[in-house]
Each structure stands twice: as structure tokens, then as C-alpha cells.
Image (cartoon, rainbow, N blue to C red; front, side, top):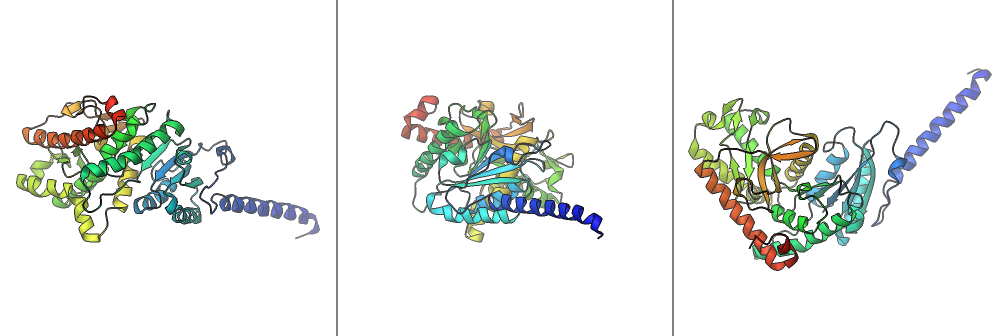
Length: 386
């Protein structure tokens, strides 16, 4: 270069070096190896054209489902390719070190949308300003444990979560999905301890059951999953759930006309969907993780961005539609639009379907009654459930 151009070259080189160092420092300080990871103010990451980061809380974040969730959220698969996120990860104190390792991996991916990570065992910190919640952490059922004991153990967990959400989350924009089982009744508990939160902002995940049903129908009929419309899961996320093909269409034809095998539907398809979780445990020696995480992503993505008029299945606050006990969290066919969901109404219910739906409703009502007996403060909100 000539002498005349050297000053320009030095100036440009200096600017490039400073920009590189600034970015490196930003990445380095996204996460620190401590139980509490500080997150810089949102404004520090924003530009005139960039959306403010959304705060997403994941509980049980170092577990198998949480681990599968975090990277997909950070990549934009849940909220979209133009929505930056701050991940607020909650774990038990004994799992915080593992969570710090997960945070290190998230940083190492250099996701363009990831604006910060909070790795903590402090429930209030985890929910501070949160706009989206995926509640994965729950107590699993152990050998010899009665279902009533399981319900009460999880009630203590979701009482704490609901209280923290009510106190700390951004309630005006907040949405959450309960993934940890028993998901529907855990949602019922959480709602009771978040009295300032609209009950419709709490949901339970039955999308995994929905996706399982779609996959089995596609395999049976040789079609693609996208060819199937108006499939639904009714009731509880349990062995009493009702996978309903009564109104399902495959490439515009009624599913029952395509399958032409009512015995397969009743004796193979329905039990297989109901028992799929147990079958996976038997096969791999562990419960569903990646598929559960994927379904949670699907659930929240469709809730936020809509289903384009198509049905999906969500465990939502029951208003008594189709005879479900009001106040419980019951899975219905829903359509999502504009950040809201609506229960599909006026669906004809044949006698077989009515029997299946009522069986699941009875189970959910009994679970809620168990909680009401153990927690009088919950019973006050739903005195009709006994």
C-alpha cells in the first residue's frame, strides 16, 4: 500500500479488531460458572430493528427433556426465526453444576437469537419477567407409590411454581405449558396458586399423544402426517385419554372410510396411543424425552403463531364443554389464532366416544378431588369438585 493509504488501512483494521473483541467479550459473559448467571439488560442487546428478547423459563432444564428443549428454543424453532430469547433455566440445587454445563454448550453453539442465559436454583429468579414457561420438572412415580401420593408430591412442586409465577412473571403476556406428569392435574394445581393469572394462560401438554396418533395413522394408511386433519385427543394425558378419529380426514376423505377397519381403530390404534409411553419405557429403559420436547415445542409454537384453521390438541381450562368438569384441565380439539386458542365447538359425539370421554373426565375429576382434600386452599376455588 502507498503511504497515502496507510492511515485508512490502520483505521479500518483497528475498528475490525475492536468489533471482534466486543463480540468475543459479549459471548464470554453470557454465562458464568456459578449457580446464578447474570444477564445484561435487554437494551444492551437490542438494535433499532430488532425485537426485544422474550424471556423463556424452563424447569427441570438439565434433565433429558429440558436438554432436548433448550437448543431448539435457542435456535428459534419455538418462537420463530426473528424472536431473540433469554433462557431462564431452573434446576434443583444438586443439579445446578450440570445445568452450568448445559449453559456452556448453549453458548458454544453461538445461536444468533440467544441473548442470555440464567442458570439457577432460585425459583423467583427463574420466573422473573418470564413470558413463556415450559414446566418439565416434576416428581416421577416410583415403584410402589400410590397415585394419591404422586399427586400430593407434585402438588407441593407446582404450588411453589404457581406462587413464583404469580409473583414474578410478566402476567400480561405470560403463557405456559405443563409437561411434567401428571400434566393435567399439575396444571390444575399451578393455576390455583397463580390467582392473578388468567387460567387460559396455563395449559397441559397432550400434543405428544396427538403426534403419536398422527404418526400411527400415517403409517397405517401410507399417507404423510400433513395429509391428516381433524384428529383429536380428549381428556387426560394418561391411559384413559381418548384418541378420536371420528371426525378425522385423510387427504379429504373420512379416516374411517380410508382405514375400513373399525376393529383396528378400537382394539389396536386407541390402546397403542394410550400406552405408547409405557411401550417406549419398555423398549429403551427410559421415558420419552426427545419426542416430549419436540411436542412441547409444537404446542407452544402453534399457540403463539396459530394453526391456520387446523385442529390440534391441548389440555386447557375446562369451561364445561362436552361435559368435562369445569375448572379441570381437559384435552380438547382446539384451533389457535392470534396467540389464543379456542375449543372447537359443536363436534358431534357418538355413544362410543361419549363413553371414552366421560371415563377420562371421571379420572381427572377424581385427581382434582384428591388435591382438594389435601389442599383446602385449592378446594375453595373449586368447591364443586369433591
